[in-house]
Image 1 (spheres, helix red, strand yellow):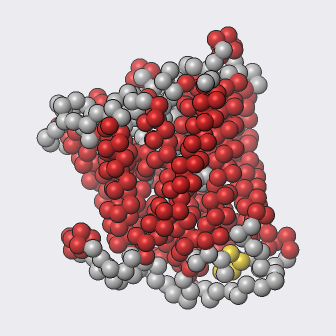
Image 2 (cartoon, rainbow, N blue to C red):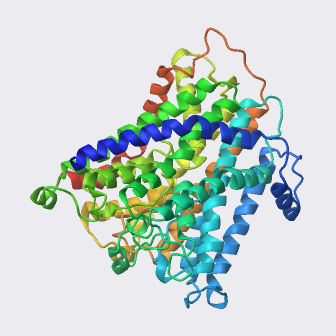
Length: 553
């Protein structure tokens, strides 16, 4: 079997596996977030936090809880890193430098997991287990909780109550993310992933699964150590390390873990709004964009454009021979379509157009299927914009799921869409304009531009992967990228929660002959089209200066 054929089989098997878990996992998530009774483990958490589980919050109260929890998480993680040398299980490492500690604390709390250091030579066991691995779970749970609140906004009527953040966070962590991670960790250990306290693989299997479920660390290869750029998890080479990703079938499992929760959430969405067809429509829109991206990146990398790839017959630089070009390309597409950032190859070594597709995946807003929770609420924002555009076409007040999309709603949706492009383009422009940042670029011309563009795109979209030919461990980039991660995470969350509050207060609008059906292929096509057009209008000029210009050279 050729490597290309093996890649096609990989894609087919992945689609089949995701289809198999879509319904049961989506239904299970639905039951978790709608269950009325509290379990014993939950009651212990509520008593420790001082929360009454039967008291629901308004969107403002929910937002304050999200921000308070995240602030405490950042401060705790920052302090844990700074005091590492005084704590047990430090592996003899000193306290983490303030700039890196700030960047890492923000990174993991925002579910970005960008790392400006080498994991195995900077962080001890305690920080990895009690700090980073914990955030891999709870930061993902925050994303799912916010998505659930937006869906409740569509489902509920004439109320300002949208649920309890602490209840949602606890249930999603205990009954969704942890069980899947424990089972998958055992499978990874059986496949050869190491788990012990005697090497740099402490709790690695469980942490590795959490990274792929919740959003993994920054992409890198061994060369990044020399460049002083980005690390990845326990190992600087991330999922290319045989201790983390030993075989081709564990590689398949990790890709599946990245996608299973985001692709199952639309099923829970359909159940929550009382119309499963709506969930299928959102899944279809996600699936179309994901499949096109995977096939495009797969094809571009297999074409091996470029002098050296053409000479040797394959673009194998920066790739593990265990996975080859096809499987590495699929992993790259999946990790940039979601907010994962874990990789099994070196994105900086991809062909110019292949690397451009990876960037474009993040620029889409990571909605196909996107991060855990963030992908669903991002796609629902795009659905709101789509029905607004459709309403303008026919001169009718737009509606979605029985709720009118008025001036307030479309303003919130529009601001959501504009946050990330503003952070990416402003951060890039200012960083390039500052003279001393030129020394951090290890490449010149369009590729150097692409490396910096990729960094700000990754940080602002809370992805975490990198081209890595950028010396990002500097005071400027630690601060600037940290701010992009912070604002790129919490400004959209506040806008989503505000939109949920606005929708929940409305009375439902009865379906009429003029109502645009949002469960049919026409709507799916419009959502995909609106997404692509908006992103193209926003980012095409800067892409033309980076990967497109390099691809034409």
